[in-house]
Length: 94
Image 1 (tube, rainbow, N blue to C red):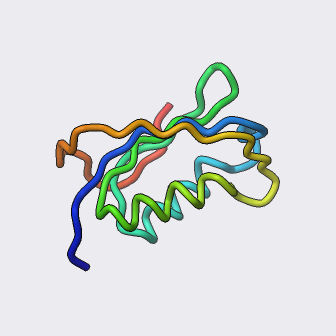
Image 2: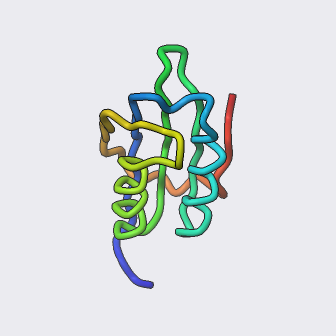
Image 3: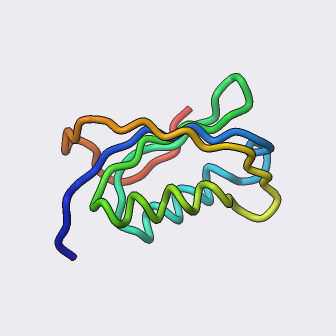
């Protein structure tokens, strides 16, 4: 799939910790061929850095807005980043 690369940092708010959000996000990102990471934040949100083909990144952002079963997403903030091409794989970080 040809396309432009894009890298974003997303912050997901709502009931998103303790519901398997990070594991779900890793599976979704991997299935879309994305690179990056996901982690819980001390304020109860979940942060993710996502890199890949523009269309796949956009799809992942839409999936973050819904979240896994058991999650209740109230808001997703997205910050566009300069593409660095340094992320490999998608992992859960502490």
